Length: 238
Image (tube, rainbow, N blue to C red; front, side, top):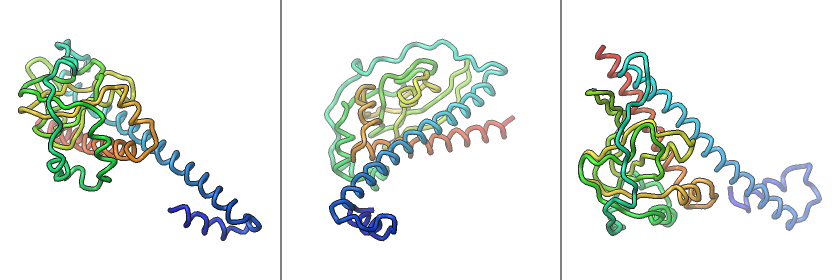
């Protein structure tokens, strides 16, 4: 609803009879700002709720893999983002053609995509280790990254982050260790956003942050569906 529409609506409210146009306009601006804050807050709460649900699903998968315990086995630490091979940003035309970003405002999307640095990773590169906190948000631009659980010689894929999909952000939102290990399936081009910049994007209330929160919400919905699908396949195989 625009400010003009809000003013017209407020003018029709009987309790507000007698207020002039300037007072109604100011009230409309205050109302709109409050609605914006509440909308951003709702998206952040929804992200936290979906992460909690995702962690529960992954914990159930982990128990099914390892028996009665869901203890995380020790793993080699993932490399810090600074150690990865940096490269130039992708061509903007390529990014605009990505189906995942078709519905986003182009200028706000570009603000999001220029908030970090770009790196290239070889196949088999561990980027996030289960049981350790992630310090960075990763967005796959090209290639694919598998989100897996490793238990002895058993390995189960919980999800896949292909072009336009992100991973590694759960720890940055709820402060808990990563629920999965993220390993590149093939040579991949990634956007890496450090935790301090992530916090700015996650808690600000502007057009860039709106795109960022919408992208996280979409990724989480996909991740929850992927984990549910894997659980159904695992039960069917027993």
